[in-house]
Length: 191
Image (cartoon, rainbow, N blue to C red; front, side):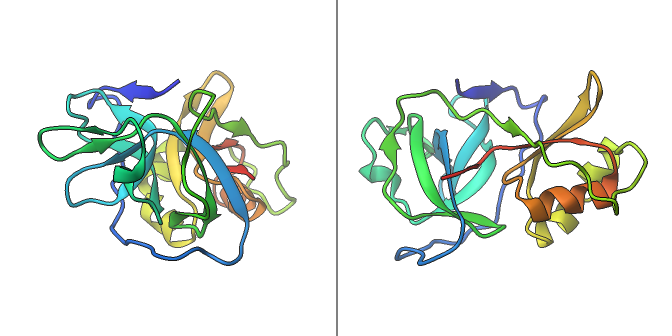
């Protein structure tokens, strides 16, 4: 299911551009099923949540490189140049900044990928306090420089919920060490 959110509900992080060419040769591979969106002159984004305006004003997700949206069947091109794909299965390498595809997108037989909660417990170095969602949001740029992309943060029924682009061990333990007890989920899944 594609997540469509009103402009007032989501503050989407729009990522800096960078086009890739050629296939990556190594690194951890991840997969996700998601629509992709490209605003005119902006990078392609695999969308976790799309703003509900028509045409879409943007989306929150991860920047995707090594893809040409015009090659994807079912592409919608809006009058302002915005391009939106149907839900596609994407496989590639996450480098902490961008998701570089290692194979062409393929039509997904499922709805968008739902985040998976992390089972990894905090290390003994973790902060004892309960995480502060406001501080996590303020630290977004600092975390991004560490290769940790926070897609959303909020307060759930039993604590602070944090959605990371990739919930690898490095990112998870860094979040626990900096913010204490938080519930972490990851969107991109190991391939």
